[in-house]
Amino acid sequence: MNKLQDRQGRRFPYLRLSITDLCNFRCQYCLPDGCQEPQHKTAISLDEIRRIATAFAALGTNKIRISGGEPSLRSDFCSILRTVRDVPGIDTVAVTTNGYKMDRRIERWIDSGMTHLNVSIDSLEPAMFHRITGHDRLDEILRGIDIGFAAGLPSIKVNTVLMKNLNDRELDRFLDWIKDQPITVRMIELMETGDMPEFFNKHHLSGKVVRQQLLDKGWVQMIRPDNAGPAQEFSHPDYQGRIGLIMPYSKDFCDSCNRLRVNSQGDLQLCLFAEQGYSLRHLLQSDDQQELLTTRIQEVLQLKEDKHFLDQGFTGSTTNLSIIGG
Figure 1 (cartoon, rainbow, N blue to C red):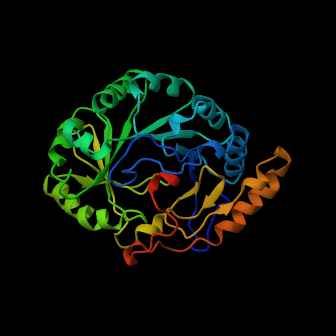
Figure 2: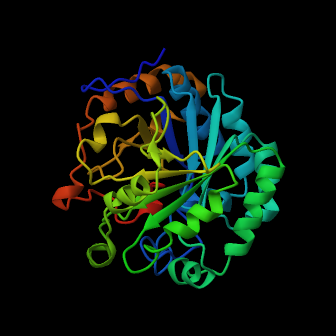
């Protein structure tokens, strides 16, 4: 039974758990100058991660996504996957990654308990991929996807941030790519963050544009499962893959919110763009604190707003997406 319910009646079977704010890519929309003041060395420990996962599972969460920054930069990353996998009640252990060295690592991740994978690919054109991310690693990421399928992953999701005048003309390229592969490409509207207002104003593109293009091509919107993320997913009878659209500026986007976030310092953040987080770390020091921890989570949840205020230009404390994992 899910015991996580806010004042609006929304339930939360899904936790996004950031284990580091460190990232080694320099994506234009997030960290174009790289990490300036990472708190990587003070990130939550393996025991603290276990206690967070155990508490949320006791409250009805069954899906945990491990994110960053870039989570695989932690030397104990595989131990974290095994630890979360072994928590009773958690049946989905997902990872969001930039794909760094994924072709060499993905088999270990699967062996350690990863059940679902999201990898960021903002362009399938190598020169544009390099321009957006600052890295020439597209080939190794694509190899990693192939290896993941060969190792038993039934499907993979790809995150693509939509950016006007950068990658906004690649829809057909992505559609060709997923025609015979069980890949869901999730096209995400560029979101404004505290560090990047000018970039947002220059490159923001509404997902409605892509939505209409899909409908014109015969794609059909699917019903959203209870523990799914925020994407509107579309399928087509001639394609094995799917397209997802994440449109945070659309009307009623927050009505179906089903996920909470804990950052790498142990703060519970009620929204990606909340004004502040609420520390749980003082209740992560002993297994004897589990009852206090679950009570604290439930109490803080009652402070969750019914919506974000991105449409009003309010970005909260999120200066860049690496600090909370998107």
